Amino acid sequence: MVVILALTLTICGCACCYLASPNQKWLSWFPSRWPFLAAASLLLGAGLVSWIAALRPLAGFFVTLHVAMVCLFVFPYSAALRSFGRGN
Amino acid sequence: MIRAEIVKLYKTVHTWIGVSCGLALFIAFYAGALTMFQEPIARWASPPAVGVEAVSLEDAPRLLELVAAAYPEAREEGITLHLRGHENEPARVTWVEDEPHEAGQPHGHVHWWATLKPDGSLMAKQEEPSDLAEFINDVHMRIGIPNPWGSYFMGVVSLLYGVTLIAGVIVLLPSLAKDFLELRIGKNLKRMWLDAHNVVGITALPFHLVIAVTATAWGFGVPLWSAQESVIFGGKQKIAMAHDLERWRAPPPTGEAGAMMPPSQLLQRLNAQVPDFEPKVMVFRNFGDKAAAAKFAGAERGYVGDTRFGGVILSAVTGTLIKDNRASRQDLDRRVGTVILALHTGEYGGITIIWAYFFLGFSGAWLFYSGNLLWIETRRKKARKEGEVEQSRSTRLLGSATVGICLGCVAGLSLTIVAAKWLHGRVADLDAWHAYIYYAVFLGSITWAFAWGAARSAVHLTWLCAAFTVAIPLTTLLAWAFPMLGMWAHGSAATVGVDIVAFIGALCFAWVATATAWRVKNGPADSVWSIRKAEGRTAARQSVAIAAE
Image (cartoon, rainbow over all chains, first blue to last red; front, top):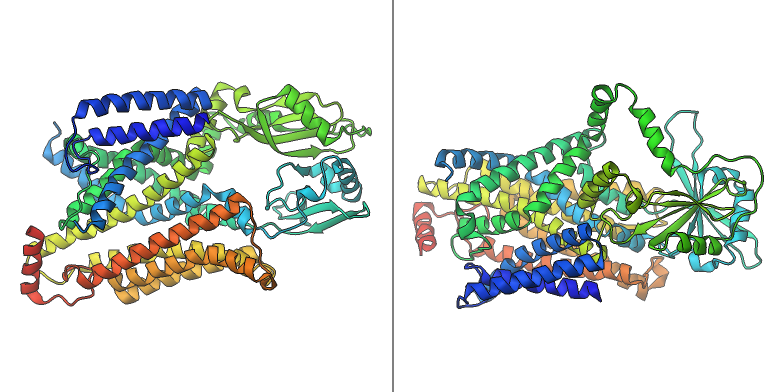
């Protein structure tokens, strides 16, 4: 249960991080950057704490890092695939 | 601010090292991604046997006694009692014996399993387990080049991979903040491949740096060992190593008989003394002796490297803890080594990290593939500026090599997985056939790519990848529908997961093949990825105009 919570928080944190980027392609408009950055920090912090609670500090840190790495390259590709599908 | 000439220099380093090592790294990363599911693949490929459940843990003492009496060599080598009941564990008890050999000479091993017949008597059988997962790992570690040259080669490639990573970051630094997470899809193909390459390279940079360092250390392990021996240890490294290994060694036999504690009670003693340890197997050394030991291999969840070098040894007579080598009990120097190696292999964090490494492994393969595509696309632009329509020989050759080697590796690995079920019981040495099949497809694909050119062969070989990959779940489906074929369809989540992932992978390959077919027919004619005849300078100018739009 803690693992699912930790994974959800980390993925949501990375999603906010992506939305805060000026290069995001999920939204056709550019949202205000700072609320998303604040949300990303909070969610990723909570995710890290949850992973540490589920595992141990070192393992928790590395799991957070690796899940974040996967999310941060998957999100731009997901946006690109959507754009590709629309024929843009 | 970095000077332009420095960026240019690092760009040259990044490009040429990347192109020269990229194909070997593609194979290592693709096979490496598959090795994250080494155990499910081994389970998928293992034929059904008697199974662990055939002998309950309560009946295990009798089985162990019968094996120890009938096969005395097994007592010394170690009798393994399986606790989980996975498909690749053929029975409750297994052991390994040396093949006949001269003393001190290298030799092979034979594998045995044993169970109890309904009348309570012993049934033992010699049967070699599937080495499919080990073969994939071998491709991952040495891309198929025999040892020790394969290890040295990959050591050099990994070292250069580290250099090219650093060079790539330096090249990107001036535009890093501006282009971070940018992936532009459009008519400017060079920009698209550059973004596709950079997004993966930058976001997964910590992973790639760790992989580069650890793979270099692994590749040069033997020479580094020899250098340490003469420079640091002065010829005493073997003594230090033997001392270090003592912590994993069971006590020597006394020659006096001792009553063995039943495995179920040993497990209770283990849980009482080491509550956080999750055992997978227990290995009995010197069964029946007063100094007999039960060595538990397993994981201590929560630690990085939870399964690496871990283990606990209990007295098989009294159940008292003799040696404790769990991750939490390791010395600082060993702990650091364990953590670094586990960051390469992903031995921590359970299923989450397995999937994360799986995707990161594929992203690594894509990084090198897209790097080559970018190089080809960049060369195409240069050629057009000079007014040439015909592509240079180097781009055509690299295009063919990229397609043949990368897709040949993918198709070869998929077909050799399929062969585990189709050829079981039909060929004498299935492990050798795994290698024959992989290399036949791999080398055949390379030949095909050079014979047909990059554009045509890219379509053919991507469809081949899709066909061989979808053959994995289709084989299971056939085995389930037609048992007379002599194959098997395991129902566990792990093995069904292999089929589902392969099916999704096949769909992805089919989609890529369709997109590639569209590109070779409709894309710019003055490209190695087109089958249309370039119609001289007029066509080239039209393409430039389209690209400019």
